[in-house]
Image (spheres, rainbow, N blue to C red):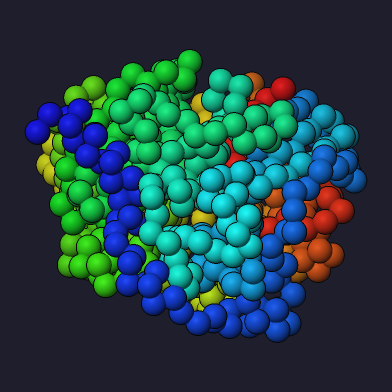
Length: 502
């Protein structure tokens, strides 16, 4: 079948299995559950991070201690799930909430914050109705209507991509959503080409040092992986699809100088489960016998592909990958955050919606080597508990050593209590521990010419019910913040962000 026809079929399938028939659920209706009541009754002090803001946050000046370095003058954009309940019904998974996009405008000792819900068609329709209307990633509300397209259920809540003066709010199953970088107004869906309207455009695009943007989308029902190459000026160069047997849940990937690299965990989509009314998440099954497959695709010729095998494990996020030519052949080195299984997506990220802390397997920073000549792959787990890995953006696809990440899993809280910078070649790590009543979010690396650079990120201080924006010297995290901005309110815990210099 011609690639353009495959693309057309994938686009017509929209959000993939999310568009499977829901008639029985819609006709059956259902009774209200008690998740919202459980959340409200909980005395967990950290639950403020999963509460629903009643509306947007107007532009507000933060209280600043110290001064943010000149290299950090600019805007940090962040996004995450925020609309977790409506009409007394609460979503059953953290990833389901309607997206809210934030901007932190940083100018020395002056920091201003603004946050706005992304005005997706889904949020607009449900706000008008005063209740949930559509199925989401892991929740099927009573009386849910069958989606009419992928973008009719697009929550735009996972990551952001600054591109040509705009910010794209990204989801997994459908289009990117255009956001005005100066006002956070929602401008509509991004269509790369007319025949690609509604195609899945995932939440972790990679930007080469030359500005080229690479991304993918998962077609679970069709067993297809969509690929995108976008020029620095924001125009589509290429789009295509490649077949993948036993299509898994794929959230992130990596690029090297010559390759695209996908780590495929054995959390596999089973269309038969979706047909019985299971949520999209629950239509996936854990099949450890498949192992963790590493799919390597030639950047120039997508027909040139190779599959390598690693031990079974689960991942959300990749740090970076790079390749080298050795006497033993081309080797790709890739670091990622690995867990033994997928319990976090099925259990812990669900139970926070009831304000319950449920401990699951601990994710660790892991370094794998893929030998393309021998077809063998090996890996080493580092000591550091980790999530949200980020690197110097100038090193994407190139040899790197330092990864910034959240660390220090709390036994009594969801998430992490510290930010760290780890050398993936030696395993040496430094960290800063925020405190007993804090929950660390993603931190990003901000370059500063030939200097060591800066680490910039947010943390929820649930003890004071405030969100903090903090900046560290990248080579001396343990010394503590060089500057910190405190908002007069707490923001819902988010996922990913991107810094744009002034």
